[in-house]
Image (cartoon, rainbow, N blue to C red):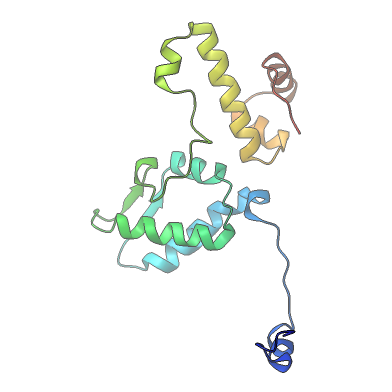
Length: 166
C-alpha cells in the first residue's frame, strides 16, 4: 500500500477478519483429523485411502514447516503417486510422497550392528522416547498412556537415559 501497488480500499475489504491459529507443530493431535478430512474430500468416493499407524506416527512426528497447506499438498501428492493401487488402499511409510527427513528414524542398522545389545537397546529407547515426547508436544500423560508406561516409571527411564525435556 505504501508503494501504491495495492489499493487501501481493497485491503480494508479483504482484511476484516483475521484468524490466528497455532502452527501445526504445536497441534500434532490435529494431524489425523486433518488427514481424514482431506482424504475424504480429495479422494472422493471413487478411491478409499487410509494411512497405516506407522505412517500416521511418521506424519505426526514431522514438524510441517509449511503448516496445513504443506500437509494438504502432501496428502494430494501421496494420493497421486498411489492412484494405481487397488481400493481400499492403506498408505504405508514407504508410500509417503516426500522425503520428510530422518528426524523420526531410529538408529540405523549399520550403527546398531556395531553396538552391544545393551547399548543398542538404550539407544533405541532413547530415540523412541524422544520421538514420543516430540509427537505429543511434551505432554507426559499422553506419552505415558501411549507407551503403556506408568508416569513414574517413564520419568525414571527418561532420567536414566539422560533425556533432557525442555
